[in-house]
Length: 493
Image (cartoon, rainbow, N blue to C red; front, side):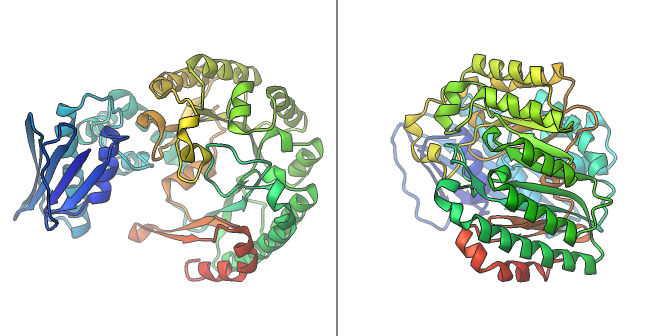
């Protein structure tokens, strides 16, 4: 157990996420200086004081760790001149995390390649530095010296940001992207926490859901047209959008075409997902309606793992669906895999990559397993074998195969509770960068999200502000309250 006392600040959430890196399975108690502090000489207890002082022209932070046997102290200072309150708070959080990280690193030997970063969008830091016209070496030094990121991750961040930058900038406020949620799946995978209602239970709501979704599409399109907003990309995700009937998919496409001007649309993604939901008839329908990019996601090419995680398809079915899509004219096909799945070791990941290399998709998204709240995996972790110590090697293997396929990393994000405190990386061949993936991650473009569980992100670049407007997750609630979901967005569009 570790007990933390914050003196002069209340950055408890930031500290908690940082402390979880050092104490992933231990109890963490964070107190403010005004709360009663109990001391304990238990060998397993660490007591940490995180202290910050705001002086006239500087912020001074200190971390002191003590237990029965030793005491470690570390002090750091940042000079602050002519900063506004927002910048002072940001700088204060940074040095609080740095001092705590440094002190803990002396006490606990652990490899943390991402240093003090716990947020999910580390590339944002690089974009800000690039906008200041800093040289590459200056950016790398800041990442290493200020955030304690290791050399390899710093170089990865810089290379990804360079791929993203021309997609994001200059910011065009008249362009928005559209996300459409189809929250149905054949079954629920053990690692999943997304709204993905299994059709075995919720098939009776499929048609009324599509009807409600089409109403939201129609009304939001009218609002966007009045504001002079044009669509740059459309992304239909889930769930598994291809799990619904071909009649419902056809109805959805008809509503999209009736509602929006699509002549200048740059990208149209349909997340076909599982091969057991893909038919030639559906592929023809997607192609005839202007879909330019699809995902066919194996997650793994090991049959035994597919059974463990709850996917009802085989590796051969995956290959068949992939070749069928190629035959129907889809040249931009993404594949998703997950490293660290239950029971999988590095050799099994290598087998997956060998099979994917034979298929040669246009892009590959490598997810590191995250143990998410609400997933079957989180609820019953003891029933699954997770080889956490191998995840770094697994990630290295996927990167090597991606390079062999002529792919480079073009977007990156992180999640809480990821094995090995690693990252998710999107790789692609030249010219196959997914615009939507970059825009949703970097949060510089407004994303209008429709359907159950979808969260719109409205950007205000001049104010450097982002507003989140969520839709309800529950299917029945969404169907009953679709008019309210439309009204929620009106003040922001």
